[in-house]
Length: 255
Image 1 (cartoon, rainbow, N blue to C red):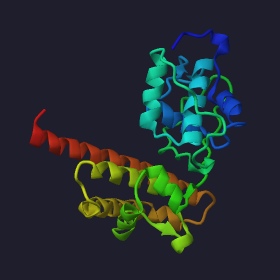
Image 2 (cartoon, rainbow, N blue to C red):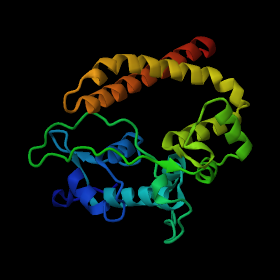
Image 3 (cartoon, rainbow, N blue to C red):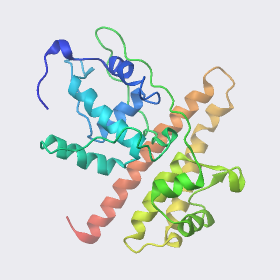
């Protein structure tokens, strides 16, 4: 991306103010998540404070529009951004071509640690994302799976619907369904993934056990503190799991 004059740089709060009229669900955590995924690369001040230029805002608009109006996965959006960076023409999502409702925007992952205190105004505190609720049809279309596969995932407990047959699925169900479909391309059937589900359930149990003392407190903010602790432990557990899998494969396949 081309260098921009210092006067054109904005804080993350300025970016939120620019984007929220068109993308009410945008949050600090969402922007940080997109940065962690390598889709945007804001500059940093000497104190570590994020600084954004007009090009960064345009890039964010492209990403958010592609998610909201076409519900494209990040993998496809990343490819389109690379094409744009190479100077290729990538048509933006057509206005009015909204194949998925806005509530389907994927929620960001766990928030990163806060930036160092800025020299001027502090960044706004991250806002909790609104819960995602998907109908059965939205989940089928969003994950690109058929009804039989979704039924099998429900049978084995990989996804759950709240509220009975006419209820809804949480946002995590979309990520699970997509992962199951991708693993299916490598020959895995849903029944093969019961061990993965059992391991996840054990990790959830460990996290619940760790935050139980905080949940028993009755002071103000106790529940929020427990939720933050749970998210931190869960992220560490996922990192540990990934590292152990890589180490095991290295022993099998070599460096």
